[in-house]
Length: 499
Image (tube, rainbow, N blue to C red; front, side):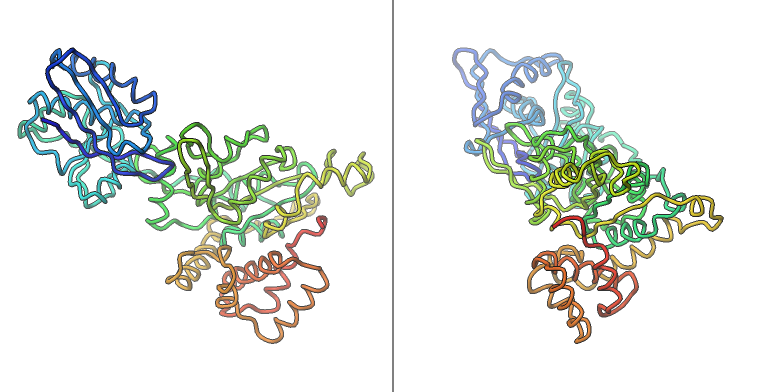
C-alpha cells in the first residue's frame, strides 16, 4: 500500500504543494528517495532511519521507496524529515489515523527530537490554502503561525509524542505564546540638534516610502539620522506583518510571533552581489528582500562596488527582484526605503577648500561612482552642513519621534484610503496614469511645474518624482490638492551636484 502525506516545497518565499509517497515492499533491503531532490534531502535518509530506531520503532529489512511528487519541482530543505518519517510509520501500520487533513513540518535529530526550522510560516499558509485542518510543527515554531485562525497549529517535541497524539486521544501540549513586543528604539529625533532639512526629509521619506540620499562631511549626522528613522516609520497592517514575517521566516530571522516593527538592513560596503540580491543554488532572500517593507541603509554609498550599486536599479523601479538559476527562476519582493549616505568627496570636506585636499578631477571621479540612472531613482537628496555651536547649545528641544510618527501615520492612513481600490498603498508607488489620476494640479501649479521642468532640464522620471514627493508633503499637511508650496518644497530635495 502506498501512503501519501501532503506537504509543500519552498521556492524563493513562495510555496508549491508536494506529496510525499512511501511504498514498502518485499525485496532486497534498500532506502531510495526520488523526485528531483537536493543533497540535504538525500542526506535525510540516515537521519530519519536513525530517528525512527531511537524512538523505539524498528524499520523492517524491506525495499523502501519514497517519491516526492511532482517530480519536476526541485525540493530542498530539512523540513521534509517529519513527513517522510510519518509516511514510513504509516506504511508499517504503526499509525492508523487519516492524514488527508494534516500536514507535518519539521527536521528530526538522531534521537527523534523535532527541531526548529526556517520557513514554517509560508508552509503553514500553504497548508491552509490546501484545505488542511491541522499542521504539526516543531514546538519552537508554533508562535509564528499562531495568528492563523483557520488552521490548528500543533507543536510537537519528538517523534514519540507525535505518534501518541495521532494514535491515541492524547492532547497536544499547551504552548504559551509570548507576543513579540514593539521595539524600544534606541534613538529619538528629539536628541538630534539642527539638520532641520534632513529631519523633514526623513519624515517625508517615512510617510511616502520615498528613497533618500544624504550628503555631507564626516560627523554632520548622516548615520544617526538613518539610525533614528525606524522610530518614525508607519505602523504596519496585518497584511504587511504577514508578508514581512514570511520573508523573515525563510531567512531564519523570525523568532516568536509575527514581526511588529519594520525591518532595517545595513550591509557593510564589502557585501557581494549575491549577498544583496540572494544567493545559492536555491536562492535565499538577500539584503534587498530582507529589507522589504522597511529600510535598506547603505552607509558610505560610493564605497560599495559599482556592480552592487547597479543591482539596485531594477528593484527600485519594479519593487521586486528576479533571480534566475539553472534550477529555476525565483521572484522576491523588494519594496523598501533606500537610505544612502555619502561624503561629497574622497576626503569628505568638499567644498570647504580650507579642509578639502581633493582636486576637482578627484571630486568628479568620486561623484561618478554613483550613476545617473540610480540618482534619478532617488526621491529626496539632502545636503547636510555642520551643526553650529548655537544650534548645539540651543535650549529649545526638537520634536520627538512619537510626535513625528503621529503625523506620518495620519499621512499613511490618507494614502491607504485614497488607494483602497489599487494594488499599491504609498505615493512612491504611483506611476503612469495613476499620477495624473491622484496628483491633479491646478493651473498655477501646472505653470510652476512647466517652469521647473524646463529650467532644470528634468527627465520624465525626475518630473514624476517631484510630483509624488509633493503629494506626500501635501498629505503630511493634510492638503486635499497639491499646492505651489508643496511643489517648491519637493523641488528643494532634488540633487543638484549630479547631472
